[in-house]
Length: 178
Length: 169
Image (cartoon, rainbow over all chains, first blue to last red):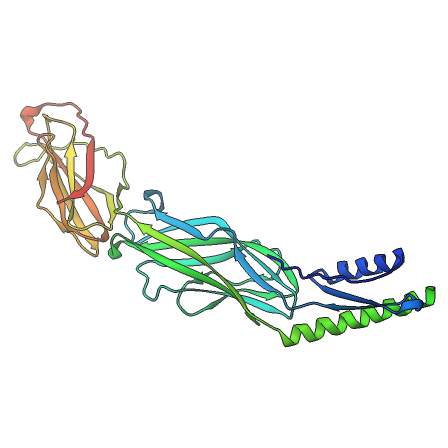
């Protein structure tokens, strides 16, 4: 999830300068590019560190299945469900300014209702449960300069009046400026 | 040497800070990932009765005819849901030769679909229609039992296990 671009060039250096460099790398926490030059007899180094913007997001698994079962159904009411799935996680890494994560589906007219909630995020703030639509909605906010993860809790609902069938969603998570 | 190293360290920190600031603003980017989710809903039928045990007692006689007065019970509510098409609800007793007469009727149906059948006499263990025309819907009704006995039937107790089923019509 984290990209590393590290280049170190130096001709001579003392152990102290290496320790100093290592401390710097640890402080930055993300991938870095390091260049060093030596001033001949003075034995000096000039090190340039460039940290590119890293904005990564990934899911732990590319597919999720939800199946409405008898256990999720109550006699005497139209609404069936919820059937839930918490088997997958969202992972992210951001080293720039404060961001948010949005979520949306490509299915314009779903037959059934699909909701999503971020459970136990390690950083950031989980939004209220989102009913998925083609309009991207906030899923996580206040995510910045961190790597983190949360459990994806999908909940499916169906109305008896909608009959049998299946909905296939492609769900997209996007890191965007908050 | 120490002075040089301090000077170098200072340069490193300044350069790094500058690098972070410029890279962060110049190359800000969004990222995204996708997941495929399939929500499947198969045909599901569920039916439930609120009153698991019903006791009916015939202990009065008509002053005019001398015959026992029938006992009535409407305490039970039947609820159901189906997302399938063309369903009905049937009722059956396990008692193939009852001594006393028991009749059953679905009253006050609420919900989106369903029509009550006429009152059913449970004089054997045949399965009979109780509610018809149930399609992709949920519903509720009262279950009205009427028990009666003739003087010639004598005294006694008999038990029916009544089964309600939501099934294809």
